[in-house]
Image (cartoon, rainbow, N blue to C red; front, side, top):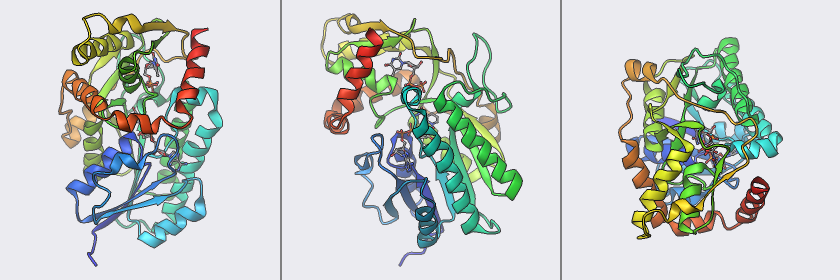
Amino acid sequence: MKEFTKHILVTGGAGFIGSHVVRRLLTNYPDYRVINFDRLTYAGNLENLKDVDRAPNYVFVKGDITNQQHLNKVFSDYGITDVIHLAAESHVDRSISGPMDFVLANVVGTVQLLNAAREYWGDFQNNVFYHISTDEVYGSLGDQGLFEETTAYDPRSPYSASKASSDHFVRAYHHTYGLPVRISNCSNNYGSHQFPEKLIPLIINNIVQQKELPVYGDGKNIRDWLWVEDHAHAIDVIFHTGKNGETYNIGGLNEWTNIDLVHRLCVILDDKLSRPAGTNEQLIRFVSDRAGHDRRYAIDATKLTQELGWSPSIRFEEGLEKTVDWYLANTGWVNHITSGDYTKYYEQQYALRKS
Ligand code: NAD
Ligand code: TYD
């Protein structure tokens, strides 16, 4: 049997970003074995990896990170040397309607995973526990300024509070027990395989289906968008060359108001769907705002760029067009992953927002 040089446990590898990370590791590092541990919630889908799941260095284990016994078994069965931890409940709107799922998966699950790593690794030879987090832990910006690694945490949604809490536990395990951890906090990702409840895929799919396009509040909230494969590249770089105990911000200096972004998608899709110019914009509806809606996120990634040499590879306009093309070419994927209760859930939520 082939000797692998690392046995990397990737949690949440069937989700949006996780699937890009798994694909990158399997493709670029045939000497590593990748153990994808995922509960397959509504957001996790093994179809995301169907192009690589026969790779000889890939293993899938269905499991829940809140289950300590199962985690201990996986560490020991597969001789886990490193962890890249992405599993989480990730949608802010769902965290507002049901915070407890976020506490369990994001806080309790992360602590269980830290415990499993600490127990199995003992004196921590060359192991890495890499925790993937979000810029939302820093709170909301005014018109000026960027989030830096030293910005004080100020989470405002149940989602960001749960991620902030998990970040604190990861750092606490480093300071208290010497666990070799690193953390990155990234801005909003976009690209292929994102569950269509997040803004960009939701707008694309609603345009395709000629459904109304919900824009929360005045549409002037700002997000800093990063191509998901650039995030996966940054994770690769930080995993291999980052320092233990350090935090790295990841972002693309690419700020868009939601309404400008929605307009842009309307224009791209008028063209691609051969609809007369201005057709899709007629679907835009301003609906009630998200409770506690953070106004602006923007990331300063200077540390990652200067210390580790990472930079984004693709302009937003190009990435957005590639993303639209992917969703147009993969309507089967969209139909499949939304075929359960999702469409009914979405229609209920939308009706509440419109009323
Ligand atoms: P996602 O919702 O698409 O995927 C999450 C994955 O985690 C799914 O496959 C799901 O099945 C799995 N999962 C959830 N709970 C689990 C549990 N208890 N045990 C095992 N698996 C479980 O999320 P994503 O957008 O890919 O985000 C991945 C990570 O990156 C998250 O930690 C998120 O906080 C972080 N992040 C996301 C963004 C973004 O823009 N999407 C930006 C910055 C950071
Ligand atoms: P989202 O994709 O949920 O990411 P996050 O809340 O983590 O930033 O939302 C991105 C922005 O788009 C956010 O300001 C909320 C807004 N939004 C809408 O206006 N309409 C929608 O239907 C959704 C899902 C989000």
